Every structure is written in C-alpha cells, then in structure tokens.
Image (cartoon, rainbow, N blue to C red; front, top):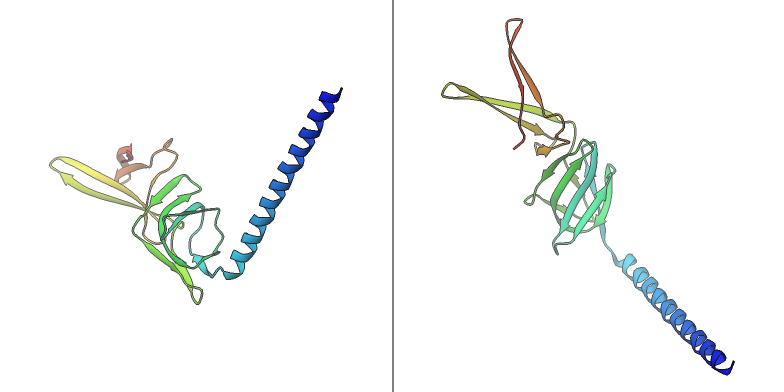
Length: 172
C-alpha cells in the first residue's frame, strides 16, 4: 500500500511538471508571435487571372509560400519572390523559376497568370510530314503543360467541307 502511494505521488509530480513545461512553452510561443506580427511589413499582390488552384512563390531565403485557391488580392510579407508554380483547376501547370515579383508595402504588385487561356497550334513541314505543335498559354503568355492526360487535345483538318484528317496531340 505504501509503495503504491509513493508511485502515485511521483506520477502526480511528473504530470504537474510536464503540464508546467507545456504551459511555459505555449506562453513563450504566443509572446514571440505577438512580437513578430506588429513589425511585419506587408504588401499587396494583385492576381489578374482565374481558375488557379495553387500558387507557389519562393522568397529570397528559399522558403516556399503555397497559396491554395488564391483570391484576386493577397497580402504577403514585403520582399522579392520568384514564381515557382501555377497549378490550374484543370490540372495544367506552369513552372517558372526566373520571374521575380517584388512585394512593396507602398505599391501593389501585379501578377498575370491563369485563365483566360489561349490554345495555339504551330504547323510546319519536315519533308513529307506535317508536324503540329500545341501550346496552352495563360493571360501572361505563360505556357501550361500536363493536365489530366486522360483526353489530350484533338484536331481535325478539313478541305472545303470534307474532313481529310484528325488525331490527338501527345504531351511532351
């Protein structure tokens, strides 16, 4: 009986110690967050495109900012970002590691990505073969690839009113 009371007492002391440590950590984290927010300088990013499922921006330290279903206007910490990826609701994506966006607290940055989309077909001869290339371009002339892949873009060729050829484009 005495051994059980000692064991219970030590368990109680250990539980209280763990609770105190956890409480101290949560208070510390809350204080850090409260201190960081007032000093955080932000700016606005205006997105001039539609049907964007996810936007990935990379800051100058290499940290990714993933923004799901971005609104027309986004508030971000001030700084220089690279556009990493634009993923459309249709599954098409655009990767860009070169374009830079500067978020300035005194000015609104503008990003043109997403829909409306424009389909573009280029055709040229290679000997007796007609080569056709397909591109899907966004509002900012960015190129999109991929998609669901279940139904690649199709084409039909007509001479006068009669269909003389048809087929599907291959991705890649």
